[in-house]
Length: 117
Image 1: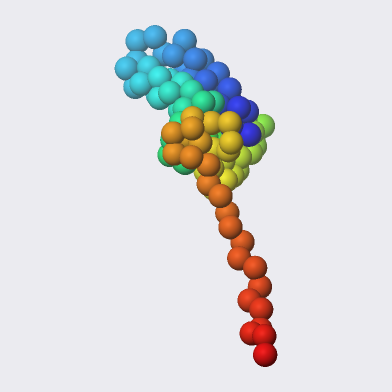
Image 2: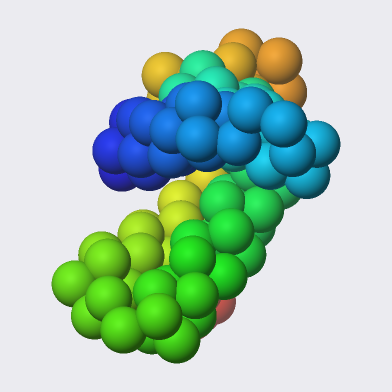
């Protein structure tokens, strides 16, 4: 999931950088998308990058709906859902976050047993 969203963000950021040669805001947005995509790809600060990616894709879907591109809006909404899943699930075992902060281990306690008499 992280790789799918990361490649999408990097591609969109590169296209934004190519399309906005003179606009500083376009260059900043393109650079930010590439940074977020790279962070997701390597799994660095995944919850923060996931929230940023979901907000960016949500803005992209609203923009596509306003301009009349329903296909692009549906794709962006799918990416929003995937970004939310990435944010809630965490980076995974093969990520920089797992190397830096350790893997999370979920311990499910057993049922309490009645005392022996």
